Length: 302
Image (cartoon, rainbow, N blue to C red; front, side, top):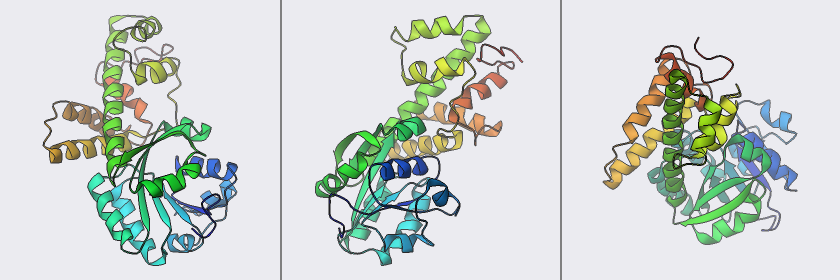
């Protein structure tokens, strides 16, 4: 990389909810950062130079970070920037992408001497802002090691999972468990509310019992107070991840008896108009079809 491994110039394509926060962390870490987003106001709002095109950005940087919705967006972007890439560059995909697509893109870029690292991230917007994301990386170990200092500006843990696609595979497995725990806990909280239980006391019990999970620990103590933790993963993005998980395990020949119910829960949320809201609003969707229940202690039954 032209600027050297210690201080590569970094470009970020996709400056949305996660990408914008990551760009800020990278810049705060002392790196020169350039950005590109279809919304041309986003880079200036972050105080970083804005490229006129994704290909233009690539020509000015050493490492390219992609923070995009999924493989259907990542694939055309990679093929668009490929002609502008040069040997020795590293492209890091922070998106939640299909592992099979990742492997194909890795081979596609490798033909030009460009490394492609799949780097699934977990922790949400709050962790991105605080620089405490977990990164699950796949690809050539040398490429992952080269970008570790850069990844460390927005993560507290970088785990090398293996060859190309392994990082994105780990991310999908994690996101499935994330979706299941959220959907199941939402269902339990609606039932508890309808049964007249004190939700704060129930959460205290759950968090010291075998039912404890990420949603009981980190989501619902805030939700019952009326704070849905806005700004995180939307319901539609959660639904997309769950469908990717289902496709993955089916391709692996693994029987899944749990994916469809979780998918249908978030499909319900989308049908009721919560799809573009934070995925935590799935509890309101379940409440809507259960008699107008709200787990916010100040609202109750509407």
